[in-house]
Length: 389
Image 1 (cartoon, rainbow, N blue to C red):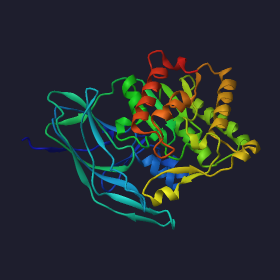
Image 2 (image 1 turned 180 degrees about the horizontal axis):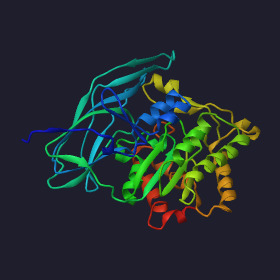
Image 3 (image 1 turned 30 degrees about the vertical axis):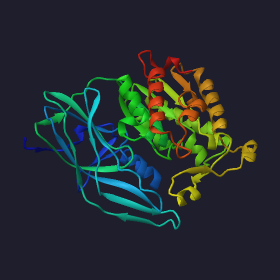
Image 4 (image 1 turned 60 degrees about the horizontal axis):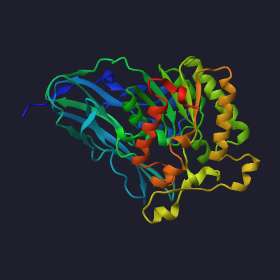
């Protein structure tokens, strides 16, 4: 058995994050830069961006065994069933060859009945990734999509260095919790990572759970990231947050696109409308936890708006799809690189019959796989997104 030696954890090992913060315990990947996090200290957004969905360590090594010590950070809802721990996956030659999870770590304990929030500091744990194979190779260690982490130390049975930049196209994506990967079982099981791996592109994923809300500072952050293809999954968070009315929605989308276009004047820019979600198709938000289901130990959501108020400007997914299609059609007259993808072509009513939304809001793991494969084929293929109608 070979002795494991430590390799310094440095920011150049981390790919897919917009910032890597040095903390007292190690490195914390962020998917929004510090200036953007300071614009709006919303607890939901700060938590979402701290979960490293699509982020990985890119290593070049002969090591057969790698150990990663880290501190997990998880949100726990008092009275709700415990969620499974996040997964770390080692990918070699396009295949996941090892995986593991951390125990313990930091907790943010939320009591839904009282609104009380308690922060509990935890300790590091180690995930061991073995069976990586011999010889020089590139190893990607995918970090969890559904919990935060601070990277403390890296140990291996052979020297480790950062992988060289492979010169692949960069796909920059922004969206909701569906894009962050809610209900996917592993980081490579989220639909954006599945699409990126199938298409052979490098992913920067700004899917932000509950926080795809057309915030101007998010648009500016997107504009600052170098990318060859940009996509935006928009609409469902605006509906389930009951954030705005139809009068404000289209202008907000125009403004968001204006800012993104300033940073990416010629890149293909793909607007993805909401995927099929029966509870919000004709019923406005706000969306909320289903307390009766929680009492039975189930996490489910429900829409609480009044369908009768849609005529007065309340938003549903059907209204949002109509508005997004009109915005893209209007802008397309002077933007030849702007495309629209109907989210129901990625996950529609027929898919819901086959793979129902287990919590009424987020796709299951199998559906994530289908969505990713379809997006890779229709948008990220060799011909580019010209097939996206």
